[in-house]
Image (cartoon, rainbow, N blue to C red; front, side, top):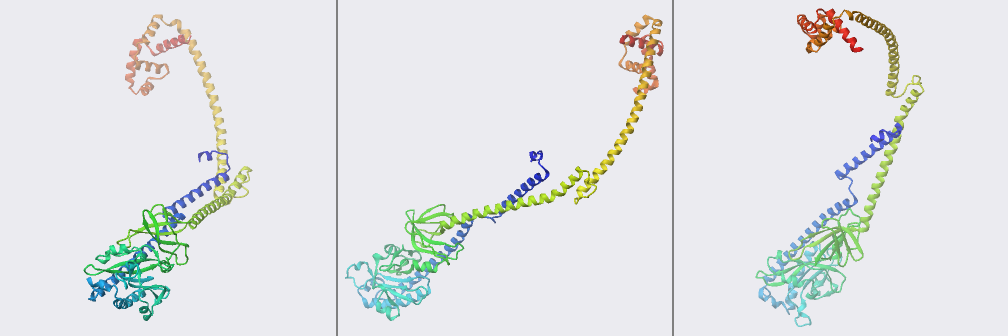
Length: 542
């Protein structure tokens, strides 16, 4: 800045530079303030905040949904256990009598069918099932894997009353307006039931600690990918009666769990983690107004949990956040993933950068334009006023700037003051010349007096006693400082009264010193003293 002040730039150039610097400082302060209060966040932070909000909503949705299904499944298990134990033919140790007893199995299914159909109508799921630990015919091939029971499945999710019978006695379903599915089978196959052995292993009381969510699998003979929320059916004495629960299909989950999303192509997934590998559970959904193909196969997540991470699987790549969630007491924690396609993320980042650059460019253009305009408007009158001063025409046309007019008035006053000073200097020069003349005259008189004194001294030299003069010279050296000072005053032509005033002592004291001086110098009068002093001075000059 100091170097700029010392340059030979014009006022207009300097003002433009100063205003541009001021504009840059203001712009910097503006952006700093906006950054501090968080009103101009980067695209990455905006997406992070949006996905954090989506994660909260998705996490609450999953937690509430599976807790509700678990509570209903436990209630269903308790009702079935109570129903079985109320029938002495099949309760407790007699439950094995249900195997190879088609009439009793039909009787049990006829009672359970109404309960299952009613629960399926009033719960958000795609199917409901009861699989009892018995079989209609234990003599057929693979009977060890065959289990009797009921399995109701929604045919179309938009109509809760439109359900089909996937497993169970077909005639019983038809009599209750539940038509068999095109892939209907009489009984379940435990070897095709995902995680059946794990569910059986957890068959213990209390029931709220025994349910689990199975791995996803494809229903036999269909393309439907489903998971089961399975609860063992256990009697009061710990007898294992079977398994019941709800089915959640991938299609149903996608349809009924679409998320209200701010992001255009949002994707939400429920993942399971095995051996540090993320595996889809088959449950995925998108935003309400869009559909995004979910990831498949083993999924790779690179990043910090809770922060933006790259989530990829197959040929697809997403940017999102992941978070662990515990849904059941017998499953490892699941992982929720909320994400958008990486291409959308990259586009948002580029768009943010372009917007930022455009904003800075517009601000700079606006600032420079304002600087040029205002500097011109501000300096034009000043430059015009300077031209008037330069050509001495400022009195002909007043300036529109009050400060310029004040400057003109100040310059006029200075001209008047300068004329007055010049007049005073001329008068002083006259006075000086007169004083100089008087000084020259006085100097001539002094030189004449000194000449006369020298002549008088030479004429009186013969009248001086050499011995007395020698005593005078010797006495000079014996004088005290005070006496020498008084002697000098006498030699300067001062009187006793004047010497007393100069030294600040009384006249009597001066006369006392006089006697000492006369005695030491061997003189008897002031006239003799002055004569000896004049001779001594003359000798010194020679």
